Length: 158
Length: 130
Image (cartoon, rainbow over all chains, first blue to last red; front, side, top):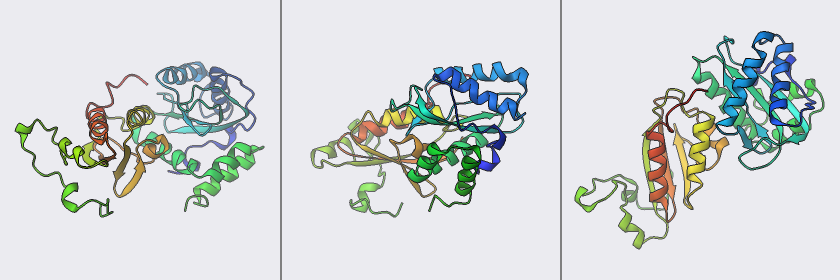
């Protein structure tokens, strides 16, 4: 699975202003609402579901990256977005580091395979230090989109 | 699985072990530890839970692996990843029914492998609502 299969370009947020976990999730969800990938009515319920998942264990997987996610019946296919926080947000990460790079994933409840393949793509690409560093330093949504496209074209992974 | 582990080939095969010896069925048996400081044990497990090895199970797997000094590697379809890295585990796309070959190496490899096999086989604890 490629980034272009699930990352919604319009929802990318390169300047997250939130300073805590819940606010950053709200901000990422708001991006998907603005991009009309999820309905405004589902905003609260999705945010709550993502927070509930975080309570089971942080999705901050280290390297300054978090993959907050949930299953939600309102989506028919996997949708996701990317957010960058320059300052970093305390996300109770597994390695204790602040998180600068967020991948929010909302998947339909009956498609666990797609969710796994999205996680696989993210973790595989993030093993590349250059990609990870460039992404965190991105200043514009277009810049992020370009990096994701390059990753999709295997320009980072040998 | 053709990669040499530096051990004679017989040491890598799960030979039948005398059940009366109180063995956990892993090969080489625990008593082997007396002779070798570096023990390599391995076992194939099947991912039982419907959601597969997603982020939380991967986290549990890595946390369990990190309780031990032994190095842990997981192999699926020839792809070998570090069992102590969540990015590594998530790269496997281990859906329900996937066979994973877990290999532990080090003086506490037996305990590490036993703990990991148990974790996988019990489905990473009961699935909760996500």
